[in-house]
Image (tube, rainbow, N blue to C red; front, side, top):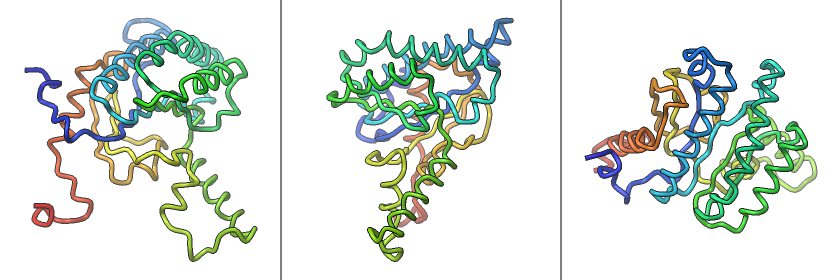
Length: 246
């Protein structure tokens, strides 16, 4: 019996976030350039999206390109941007067929025009879809996102639109990029690294963390199902005791 058959469909996480790590190491192990790993990593994205659609997961957020990634060699950055453009263009019909709505978070204005235009066109085209919300974290920094939220709230206080005593978690979350989305209940990271890498720091406060040594280009649908199955075996207490939950 495979992992898919063991999954309890009544206890699925509404939102899964993934740190897709290991493309460069995967390519290096094969004596190839890093971009070769990124290209093969796109196949893993397709497999995971298919798995999420199959299970009727509501939200899937992928750490696609961090704000810090702009510091990588220019040739690699250009190759990644071109890959994003080509992948979105190639997959748009699949998104429509599978009822997937494409979304993006981050400092998108830093993206090259071609990449930004392809992304926004795809988001517009899929905006009416009602299935999986696939969010790409692009040019994304969680610390930058939190600072942006603080500034937005401060501006509203200064403008008399908001009182400081009324600021609560709900108002804060309404000023994050992820406004309107449930917080991730499961965070997956590939490649054997055990860190969060400035990703959704506020949103994953109570997420279950799942780490695997598999490099991202080797991560497939069955691995995705295994992560969900592991999630379902955990007891989520949110500060309470097991006795209280039971």
